[in-house]
Image (cartoon, rainbow, N blue to C red; front, top):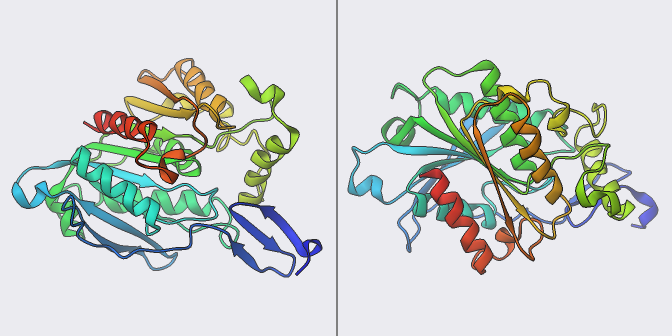
Length: 315
């Protein structure tokens, strides 16, 4: 098939052809849930909703077998991939959340939301909120999922995600701040290389290549055809009047020096401080690294340092 037949080309993520064919260029591999032989973390898959189809992978650390009476912090994780690729079941995300669970000693729910273009935004937001509400339904120990009833401390809940998943994380925390959920206390959120954008350039975006800027804006238009554009409050928190209602006390923003989204992460911390939100925000920057480097090379020094920082934040 020739290039003329392409409707959208967001390589290295996804291509969509004019005949409607969707070609995902990454993130389609899957690994089954398991008991990890190295760290003893157990995982299993759960169905949250049949219609729409929402599922999740739940992880519990080895300590739940050693001291089953202890309640542990609960991490809800949203994967990245431009809203269009990846899942909690892909090797990189399974492995990453598994390690976080082991090192931070937390229970984790990694959410499988529906992907674009088959399910345009706001489907991913709707699914993520449905998953959060499903998790919250276990706060009194009477939910449908035994692991959450037994091991999760709903007064110590965290949201985290990378890239598009960090965008979802932020928007879910705002929604929680506006709507509240009975029995659930969101302590903090972790935004790793968050996908935010806007029509007004910030920082080094002033001199960024036009193609880079078009890609960043284009991914959003592709994911959310009904959008008003790059200043949609879902993509540009500076334009969100509800920003000050962010429903947690602490925010950790992780950026990477060579990531085209880096300045959005720094900018987010600045606008958050001015929004009337009364929590604490911290930004850490990985030198010499690109977008989601920690997933591609999880054992490099910067990735290990990033994970240590997230683990201490969760504790």
